[in-house]
Length: 440
Image (cartoon, rainbow, N blue to C red; front, side, top):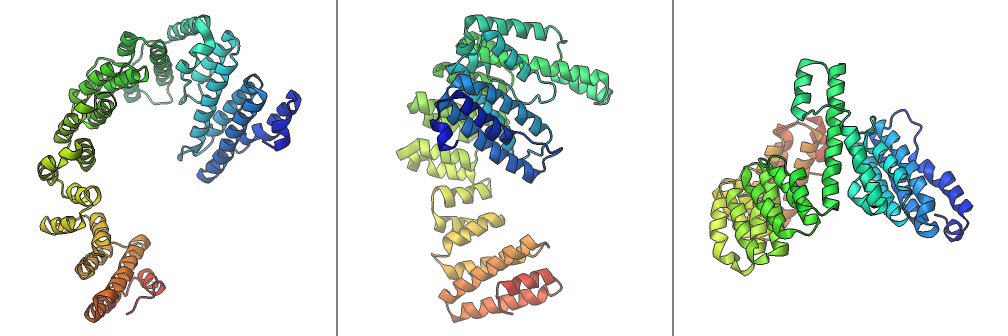
């Protein structure tokens, strides 16, 4: 906001500034925003959010709240006609919603008016992938406003049939997505999903443990359901119960959702019962022996790591890439990683690239043959990216060879000449070699 506007206490001046300079940042007259245009729009709109927040700080929440609502409406219209695959415009919407909730808390509108706005936003038929977090509005609404909101949820839910995701998928198989039957089923499922999420957030706002379990936990047979309970219980400070549900989520099944829940279980233990964290991390690693879980176990074990390192590494070695990467990046032992990579015949070019960088200061001569193999591997495919990678490796080879000695220099030159000859029918590669000023 310009300095004069920030200092000017007159409401009319601030409103004029918001109308003239800020709201246009959220509008777009384009029929469609390409990826680049969407990012440019989003960048300006993010600046607009900052200006709205500053205006509220200087002129008051009551004045600015209606303009935030207008900005939200404009941004939703823009995102309907945009390639927002970067997520930048969506982030603007989320920031505007957070600002709206903050201002509504500072200067609560009439409850009936606020309820109407929230419901209109949540049940918008055109842009249905954002939802207000009603838990942030409970204090602004007050008991009577919350009661009104609950009653409206009940009324809305009663207008649609009880439709599950499976029902919608069955309709897709039977009808086209443009059919009235599909549209009806999809609409009903969306409405019930929005209502369900609102009730989950109300349970959190009420700090009602049993309601949280009932609204978040589903039938309790999936990891994500139990983890959702754990997240909500954490939000209200019920850490012991949250740990209980996160642990249950970790063992109710064995997929990626269970592993994610297991990490939450360990994180909660680190916060609430740190003495239990190392044992839990060990259990998680045994169940999912990955480099990331081994790293988490090492950090939790502290001084006790030396006692379990050999056993952890033995289990991790079943995945050669993870094993070498852990030794190199987590343990910082380039010599050991180099020796193990050769012993286990590591095939991953990315890991070898990191190994070369880490081991070259230790033994430059040893990495030269590996660089030759990597260059030949690069050239097994065509394309400018592969060619540029190969040339970067060749340039590194020549730099290292200078420090190794005359024989290494001669070998590097001979290798580059051979590569140039073998790829003489790849003019783009030859051009990259010339650009890199490589001999041959």
